[in-house]
Structure formats: C-alpha cells, structure tokens
Image (cartoon, rainbow, N blue to C red):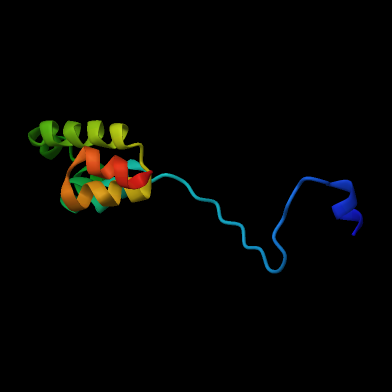
Length: 92
C-alpha cells in the first residue's frame, strides 16, 4: 500500500504485466511486406548493376516508405490495397 500512497494519481494494472518494445519496420522489412523479396536480395547483395536497372522502382519504394512512416499496420493496409488514403485512415 505504500506504493499507492506515495504515487497518488498514477495507475498501474494489477496482475502479471508484460512489457513490449515496439518499433517501426525498417526498409528491409518494408520491402518484404511489399512482396519485393528479389529487390531486397539485390539490395542486400549490393548488386549495383542489377539495382541500376531498377532504380525507379527502388526510389518509388523509398518514397512510399518515408511517406508511410514504417508503422506496421499502415504498411499492411497499404500493401493490401495500395491506397495512401485508406492506409492512413485505417491507422487512426
């Protein structure tokens, strides 16, 4: 009870509490979510001759990733219907 008396106004759940650290997707995870595994493999292998052929596609994905922000649910919604508006509205 001492903790309750000292920390008035602070609530904490009773019982077992599990803490999770959640982070946004990195660009590699984003490419996997977008079904671009061959492009990801070229990036990871640093195959610059192959990447040069797909520069426009890669830059489009970089722009999309920056705009969407890497949040998993937003990227999932975007991967399903490729619509920015629905992806961001569903996240709210």
